[in-house]
Amino acid sequence: MHRVNGACDRVTTVFFLYWPISCTSLPLPLDIVHILTIVCFAVHFTISFSTSHSPQFPFPTMAEKVVLHYFNGRGKMESIRWLLTVAEVEFDEVHLTTREQFLKLLGDGDLMFQQVPMVEIDGMKLVQTRAILNYIAGKYNLDGKDLKERAMINMYSEGLRDLMEMIMILPFTPPADVPAKLETIQSKATERYLPVFEKALTGAMHLVGGQLSCADVELLECTLMLEEKFTGILSQFPNVKSFQGKNITFKPAITRFLQPGSKRKPQPDEDYVKTVLAVFDVKLLSR
Ligand SMILES: N[C@@H](CCC(=O)N[C@@H](CS)C(=O)NCC(=O)O)C(=O)O
Image (tube, rainbow, N blue to C red):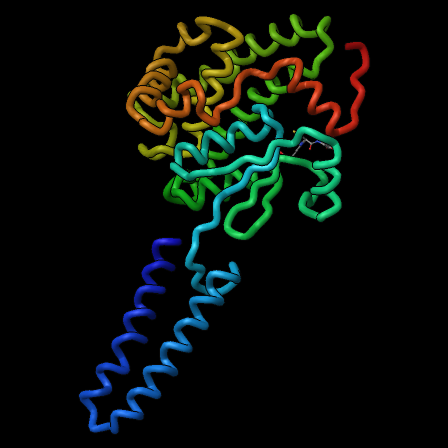
């Protein structure tokens, strides 16, 4: 899109620069050609100025940086970080650390449902994790080739989200309940979810349509999360394990994202939990 807009801009430049010059081959007096040249430059620079100041103008010249508004932790934003990384999109992050920051976002009307994650992208302030992921997947061709592929991708993605959300909620679970929750997650992972992906990856490098999609990216994120909690969980799922290994080894953006110091967030700790609770002004019972 930005490449197309840049090309359009160059076309207008060439047109406005060379059209008056080509006029000199017409039998026009020289001062008329000069006036035409000045008028053309004035029009061209007015357009250039408008494009760089209004994202709504048909031909924006500058790609705006994507900005993520969330905590300095995984939560619901982590899948968005993964997808942007795989799409090789640079992004900045504004980390929520105080209640005042959150109230400011609310006061400015930036959070449609008074919730984060919120992502500034292409002149919009997007909320709702699924909507954000769909937008990125659609923009960067990670959502399949047709409606049927998209339906498969969405089914895989939603299953993975269900599983990841069970893990995401753990730090906010009363400590006494954690062992039982972990057991449930492990049995659901091995009996309900991983068998589906093991089958889908039989003789295939990707989940859908022989090409990378957001479902593959979420599967990778999810399997790594599972292994953090349950070492060796993938040993009964060789296709999933090999899928994970190939993506980590052969996709440079993923390899980089898994290196220390990248924008990938670590597992949530006490500080992360405290910050989330303070920002939302929530007191957890029985902690
Ligand atoms: N359906 C929303 C849920 C977002 C959500 O629950 N966000 C939490 C933080 S992870 C939040 O902002 N909670 C504050 C609240 O609901 O008041 C999504 O998927 O983005």
